[in-house]
Amino acid sequence: MNEQGERSSFLHQSELTFPARPAALEIRHLKKSYGLKPILRRVDLTLQQGQRMALLGANGAGKTTLLRILAGLTRPSSGHVLLMGLDCVAQAQQVRRLVGVIAHQPYLYEELTALENLHFFGRMYAIENVQERSEFLLQRVGLHKRAHERVGAFSRGQLQRLAWARALLHAPHLLLLDEPDTGLDQDGQELMQSLLAEHIADGGSILFTTHLLEDALLMSDSIAILAAGRISAQLTSADVELDELRRRYQEVVR
Ligand SMILES: Nc1ncnc2c1ncn2[C@@H]1O[C@H](COP(=O)(O)OP(=O)(O)OP(=O)(O)O)[C@@H](O)[C@H]1O
Image 1 (cartoon, protein in one colour):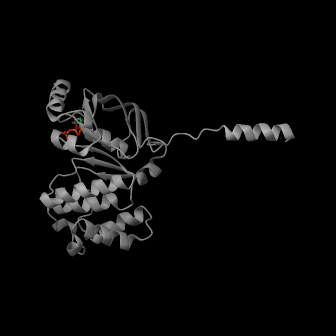
Image 2 (image 1 turned 45 degrees about the horizontal axis):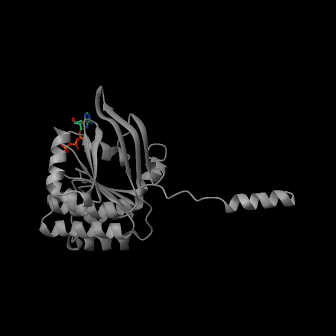
Image 3 (image 1 turned 90 degrees about the vertical axis):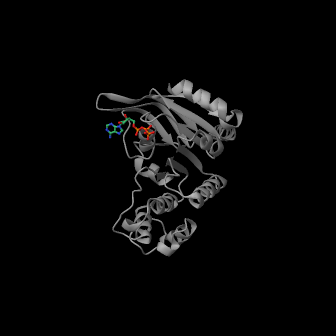
């Protein structure tokens, strides 16, 4: 390259603008049908890194379906989903490492102990310090005394606590939480709140579903309402009172 060429390439480089960091989640024109039945007709949604979003909607609106697509458990019929800039379908394996999921099913092996379950998932995610990390999380969710008990004998709330440990095991960026407080007692609810706060303090992002509008408001930075297969309303939590949220929700889901 001649002198002039070097200079122009230097100038070019100095003028480069670095791309803004990718959104935690970017959903465009997402559609999902089961057979001929459309469930998600056109979902567009963005969640920035470090943010918490509540996803509301009536029974059967498609919230779980949407979360399952984001978690790589179900394929979309069409549209695009990017997670931290990675395509949910084309880069599904990398995407799975970025998400921690609490779903309706706990996704745990009943015949294994709590510790064995975490070891199993730890190996799946190729976590280096799996023993240490598993013990730390069992302690954190209050199950350290049950580490060597078979999960088949756990109560619903204990399963949910272990599901939390499993979801956090690989330190995912995005938590996808489908009614995450199901079965948790008062202590469990407080534990969940502190796990969520720690996740956000560490720079993570959260998308969760709930039917409790009050919780949605308290636990989120923004609220999206899914109705008729679309995000029919999006609100900034700090700008809306509970009564107004109730009114908007009724208007949209009716
Ligand atoms: N595997 C499937 N095959 C066929 N239909 C399905 C399947 N999974 C979900 N559906 C249908 O998709 C629609 C949306 O279900 P989904 O579980 O996503 O709703 P939801 O908003 O999470 O509801 P809820 O608040 O009751 O948990 C429902 O009509 C349901 O029957």
